[in-house]
Image (cartoon, rainbow, N blue to C red):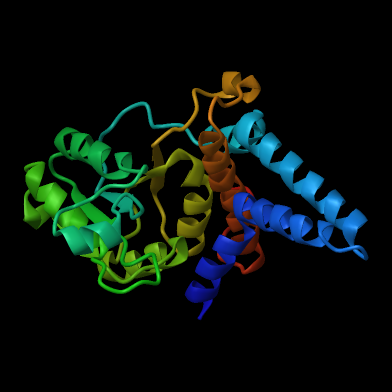
Length: 265
């Protein structure tokens, strides 16, 4: 039940969706004599919010602290496994087209191919099932397995977890399969903006010896905090991603699924 509520709630709380609803409600109320003033206020607030989120640097203010929270390790050696979080495979298109379709987070998988070459003795654990509530879709594991084969990675090195639907389940289900032992070292691969929550969750779930390897950067760093956007869709998309991640951090912390509100190194 929590998974379904989180997916539905996540859609409803996205700033872009909320502001469009606010704008539409304001326009409707503006047509009535009783609520005309309130309608005009809501219309103005919705329009102003869309402009700020779409074109100002606000999205970068939110996402840069997330991306810069963890740094990649200086060297790659002595790791027992590479844990790759789902999110890179478009399960709906993959299920219909019969070939692996990637999302904007494709680097979670493509950079894993580089890591697999640099660490030829390590296992690769991909964790991700069906993240959306629709039928006729593949699991992320199916799509990832196909790409790993195309990259020349032996199936004997790959462990697939195909039931999880969120970050908490990624950590718990993968742990149940792998049974990590004390002293083992693991490399965790996910989008840089998602890394703080992922590290807090894996630690809370009982994983030890996990090192962050952030990928899929959306910004250059602090210098982008003053950079706006030349397209409304670009700004709104990034604002939605960053806002949802901050909400996710808060929710996971309140539910006791993370070690702290904003996990750090």
